[in-house]
Image 1 (cartoon, rainbow over the protein chains, first blue to last red):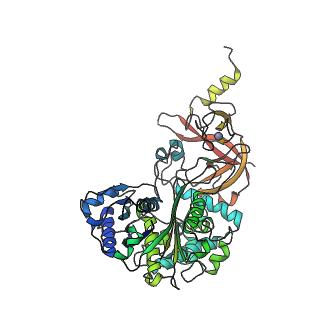
Image 2: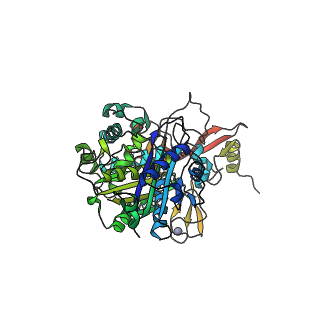
Image 3: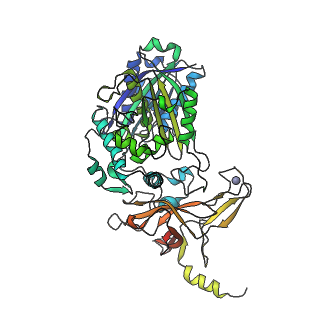
Amino acid sequence: MDVAIVGIGIHPFGRTPARSGLQQGAYAARLALQDAGVEWRDIQFAFGGSASAGSADALVNELGLTGIPFINVANGCATGGSSLISAYNAIKSGEYDVGMVTGFDKHDRGAFNADPKELGIGEWYGEVGMMMTTQFFAMKIQKYMHDHAISHNTLAKVSEKAFINGSKNPNAWRTEPISVDEIINSTMVNNPLTKFMFCSPAEGGVALILCRADHAKRYTDTPVYLKGATMKSRRFGSFEVFAPSQALQQVDGPTVDASKAAFEMAGVGPKDMDVMQLQDTEVGAEIMHMAENGFCEDGEQEALIQQGATHIGGSMPVNTDGGCLANGEPIGASGLRQVYENVLQLRGQAGDHQVPDDPKLAYTHVYGAPGISAITILQR
Amino acid sequence: MPWSAEAKKRDEIMSNQVPIAEGLFSWPAVKPALLASRCKQCGVAAFPVASSCMACSGQDVEIEELPSRGTLWTWTVQQFMPKKPYRSDETPETFVPYGVGYLELPGGVRVEGRLTENDPQKLQIGMVMDVVFEPYRIEDNGDEVINFFFRPVQ
Ligand SMILES: [Zn+2]
């Protein structure tokens, strides 16, 4: 049974003091229901995630108590992707006809502070100041720049593009373009990454309505089909966040594994993708994820980014809504924002950030601690 | 039991010093070393010591000392003071940026640790570093908490 996305809703990302995270989730859910032309009482199941804004299933208090199974999902930055895969499998199995996937969040300012105990790491690791996702991202791109000749200017160009795209997206948080000079010269956070090269914790909500593909036209004239949806966790030897040590023999990370599986499932390849949303918690991630997802070889990013290939009008548009860099990261909602953006792109409804030439295939990728990746391939 | 000069020296030096975590490195010891577990089934080493093997799921491991010298695999400098669970003697006013990196220890693993050097100009992938054991913070009871650091070889 194929699966279609027939309704989408979003609450603007950034800071909304007047609304709780849950209310932002409900806002997005109502828009998604309206978009699909269904009532909440028609929804047969839901998967949802929120890291800091309460249990996702508390949404029923806002939307109505209809007795459906509502399953909470918690997989760090890959929460949205994990919820979507769970819903995809629920429909694909034939068990359900129509369901909702939702994610929302509301985080405090500043870097996320993780608890070593939750990840089975000794407390000493946090006490000495190594329980920092930002350090991992910095060390990973530091090594990558050394091995594959990526320049500091190219790091900054990724942020520059994110803020340009954000300025075209009415739902983005950061909507002012920032120059390469200003990005490079902003406060150093973790060498080689400066303040404007990182995304920040934020707020927002997204909801999607999924149904069996043969019912899709009942809800919409513009269904978007999930051709591939995969999720992988790390294998022994991959270099991951929150690792007190790593093996001498390095293997491909979960992104490479999940990407290959998704392309195989969808029966298409990286060159077929017209638009892609790749996890960009900081600029290095976007650069490395281009290669890990198969869109270029290691090192080719330097020329591609300098030539503008990843811009909206370029040959391989990446993070057309401004990505995490311009939208901030509400953990529960982030992965679903990518899917929301791709549905807009495939429907031709992305407005100022629309990719030209009627895109047909779109790709999303999320990565989360302590080493998980989820991919979707969408087709109109 | 005969009184050894070595044990006496050890007692004098270490009486007030406690390791940041038990089992992370040999302590007290005349020549402390990081401790790893090595899987008897597949031969892969892990740090810190684990009771099972992440590579092959084996549960038969033995503990060994890791080499004290290796090469820097990658690094960064932490430029702002982390929030809890960070626990040093510093305040936001006295905070000093610190280096963090992975040291590749030949035949063992790549271990993540703090660097004694925090100047980006003096840090380079591939440089040789020693594992050293130094005071990290003072506890309320006066105990000196010892942590491991990686120090560039001069
Ligand atoms: Zn083993």
